[in-house]
Amino acid sequence: MILRPPRPVDAMEIAAIQAEGLATGHASFRDTPTDWQDFHDGHPLALVAEERGIVIGWSALAPTSARETYAGVGEVSTYVGAQAVGRGIGRALLDRLVAEAAAEGWWSFVAQIFPENRASLALHRACGFRTVGTRERLGRMTYGPMAGAWRDVVMLERRMP
Image (cartoon, rainbow, N blue to C red; front, side):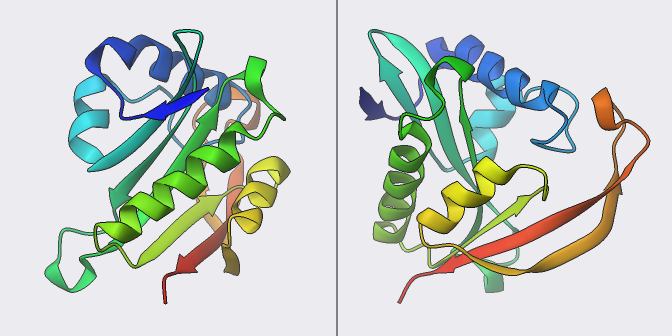
């Protein structure tokens, strides 16, 4: 497996992996995968995990705000394809993403995760994130098995020294 920056040719695989997560109803409030242009423009730092020429996971960092006072604060997203779950791909991606971002001056990382997504919560905790709290009934699902349900979101963060 290699970790590298994403390329436009990876767009379909990135979207397919995200679509797998979205189909569970526990990955995001989004109902469709991010298209390449929005992915590229919205994430100043991103990585994909590639194995035998196939993208099997990705992790990306998006600024939490355009306001100058929040420069260096980013929200992380990590998705691993179903065929690669449980092999340490998510941990490798998230650890590397945080390390590269910190080297570029990012100092605070946040993640917002549904409480039902235990694997993602465990991943972030293993990568040094701590739970800040739970945002109750933050949003209402518009699709999938949880359509119409109000959802809580666990807020996690990792701060650099």
